[in-house]
Structures are given as structure tokens and as C-alpha cells.
Length: 399
Image (cartoon, rainbow, N blue to C red; front, side, top):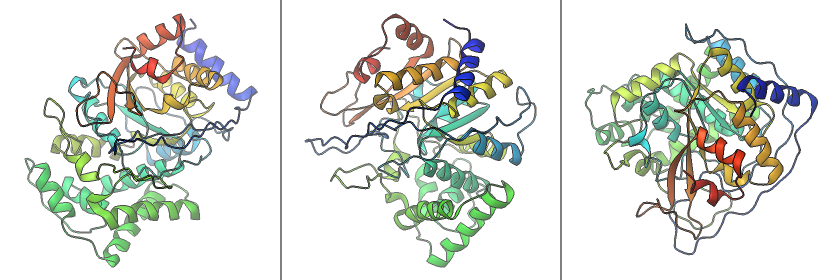
């Protein structure tokens, strides 16, 4: 087994010498006969295409001071690969089991890597990392996180966060011990007017383009507007949807935010302290969205190099069910290569989501069609070295 530095050197060298294989493995979402309510966040493989070259943004080791807006934007641009098509917008999660593992997550500092929309904030709030990277093949997901970053900047509390998300400009006071129900009602019980939405959206756009210095194309602006409009129009009733409707009933944003773990822990909006931590991390530009393929040659390799430079380990990597679509042998090899390049230790874990497509997981909770699971990096690498993984079912049952 190569050392971390050796593995990283091999990856960065291969990225310069070879382009990624472009291969499509998309399959239509499975039709579930039981009137399902939830599916996994990624229901099709992401084909691998070459990403544009970009230099790794310079950064100070060990995060002695918060990164500047320019450093944040340099990482967003420099670490990202090309945009990829996906057959859903994923404005919100569809994994009702996402809190299944939060009771076992402890503050570890270090670095977090995740994928998808708002469920990442709950994991980040529990783990209290120094830096977080949200990696997704869709540029739309990165833009969604830029929108969230702008909302965190504009909102002084949870109620205002919800209000800005649904397009309201209201200035709201909030008691530190306000319940989640009170927060959601204060922020979203009243619909914003079209004029109010326009005003709020302009402010958020100004922060992204002006304060952060992110250069947005006309398509980016259209995507941001469509994304924010979805929350404005549907508020807390917003649900995950496929572009091609399948008749499945997914959980609403309210249902996801109000969910509780077995130990009584909730979403990132349940506690004022969690929101305050996330807001501070956003204000310090330490939650960075990245457009990237888990089996690609650019994004994860550059994140690995950045973490090595800062002497940070990965505390948790939330992969959702993306690995289900990386099982083709050559794609899997590239994914394993990227995993092995990440700096980790004995505490480093994966957080995965399994979707019941007719085969119930032993740890699947009653009333859920997803199961959320953890596995240590050490166990994954040892098992991969010994016998490898041939199916996603084998992977999610090996803990």
C-alpha cells in the first residue's frame, strides 16, 4: 500500500498525463411497486468526462486565519470540473433516514466532504469540522450552496434564514431557545410577494457576485433564479422531483427539517448553536462547493492536496448512494484511487445512504425506504485490498 504522499503524487501525475474516460452508465430510476415515499439522492451513474485544468488555490497551512473571499472563490473555480447533466434538480434531499447516524457523530474538527443539498449542514453541525467541501457533478448543486452561503450571510438567526430562503425580506427577532416549530412558522408561514422575492434575490446575487467575486454566466444566473424560485413558490412544501415524473411521493422540506433521530437530535435548524456554528463557518469561507465527479481526475485530487497542505484529516465523507453508480470496474478503480489519496486516520468514516429497491437493508428503520450507514475508511481500504467490492449491496453490508 502506497503512503498518502505517494498515492497523491500518482494521482496528480495521472491527471496531467491522461484524460478521463468518458462513459455513460445512466439508467432510469427504478419503479418501486409499494407506493414508495423516498429514493436516494443519486439514482443514476455520473459519466466521467475530462475536467478543465486549474491550479490549486494557494492557502495557509492549518487554517491560522479564515480564508479570504478571493481564496474561497479560487477554490470553487480551481477545484471544480465540468458541469454534468443529472435527471433531477435535487433542490432538497430525499433521504428521510439521514438522521439515523447523527447520534454517533461527535465533534472531531478536521475536514468534512459531502455531496448533495441541505443534509450536509446537519452533518457539519454535528462534526464541527474546520473546513468542508461539498462535491457534486451538477454545477446546479454548487450554485445552490452559493445561494445558501448568501442566505447565511444575510440572516442573523434561524427565522431569518428560513425567511430569506423562501424569498421574504422580513426582519425577525428570535429567542435563542425558540423551538424549530416557532422558527419555521416565523420564517415561512407568510408567503413573500413577487416584488419581495425579487428584492431578496437581488441582494443574494449581489453578495455572490460582488462580495465573493464569483463570475456567473447567464446560465448560472438563470439556474440560481430557478432554484430560489422553487423555494419561493413552494416554501416548506418543496419536494425532491425527477425531471420525468414517476408518481413517487417524496418528503417535503418541512418533514426533513422536523425529523428526529432515535436520540432526539434534529436538523441543523433545530438548535440556535448549530445554526450559529454553520453561519460562522460560512462567514469564514470554510464551506466550499465544488463541481466534481467522485471518480474524476481533478476535484477530489485537488481537495486531497489542499488537506495535505493544511495537515487536516477527513473526519467524514458523506457519499449518499453515489458509489452504487461507480461499480463498473474501471470507474471503481478511479474512485478507490481518489479515496486512497485523501488524508485520513483511524477516526475517519464514510456516511452512506442505501435505497431499498426491493431488497430491504437489515438496518433499515420502519417507515423508511432508505437506510443511512457508516463505515470506517480503514475497514474500507482493508476490505478493498483483500477482496474488493463487486456490488453496492456488498459494500453497504460490510461495516
